Amino acid sequence: MRISELINKGGKTAFSFELLPPLKGNSINKLFKAIDRLKEFEPKYINITTHHSENVYKEGSDGVFRKVNVRKRPGSVAIAAAIQNKYGIKAIPHIISQGFTKEETEYALIDLSFLGVTDLLLLRGDTKNLDPQQRSMDSHKYATELQMQVNNFNLGKGLDDSVFTPSEVPFSYGMACYPEKHEESPNMESEIFYTKMKVDNGADYLVTQMFFDNSRYFEFVERCRAAGIKVPIIPGIKPIHRKNQLTVLPRVFRTDIPEELEKELRKCDNDDDAKEVGVEWCIKQCKELVDAGVPSVHFYSMNAVDSVRRVAQQIY
Image (cartoon, rainbow, N blue to C red):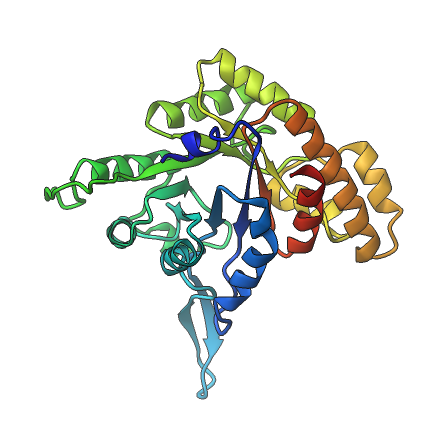
């Protein structure tokens, strides 16, 4: 069952969340503990973020600095399969275009199809930490190009023009959208244009970048519908849980912090105070979204599982 069908089944706003794979050296039990704290809210699916390796310079015993390729977190293929098999909940790995070659992407698709993980989230991924060598890789520059590779794979077409028998269950996928405009979009008209391109090319649903002002989401959905975009547009929500996120989140994710929320966060003396403000604001946000009939609420739970749990207890 596609995600668009799954979230509309049951007649109420669905619940889902995103997990960050632990740093290498940690076991998967850390993720399982997070899921155990949230599974009572019957998540329709769980997203697993993907992270490309980084090239760093390390000093050797001879005093010479050498470039070393470092991977800090496990890949999402194995994690998604483990979660899906243990909990029977759809696990959705992120597939990103930047930092991975087209060939590596095909290998991932082969493995995921074999393992029965057939729901994906296609993204460009963060490009800020890519060095010139990684930027010159044979990778897709945009998520819409990655989309074409997945579409071709579903048709049984490989990168090398080889032909194979398509899987009985093709990949379905969601893609990102930006109610406050992607940082590289010149204007909102351009944002809507490329959002529609993703849907026209096969995206089953859209999930938004985090936002803290619901009016931005409602306005964006209205413009999408006017442009003929009919797929579910899932709001992505994050409870603020640290005081420094007042400035970090706008810088990293290009999202606005409403004046009312900003004033409350500036009053906070520490992270515990900020966490309380974040939970209260998030509950308020989610109640308004649920009352408006959104199909699902997707929580960015990274390092904030306790906050997401408290919010979910008030909403679900």
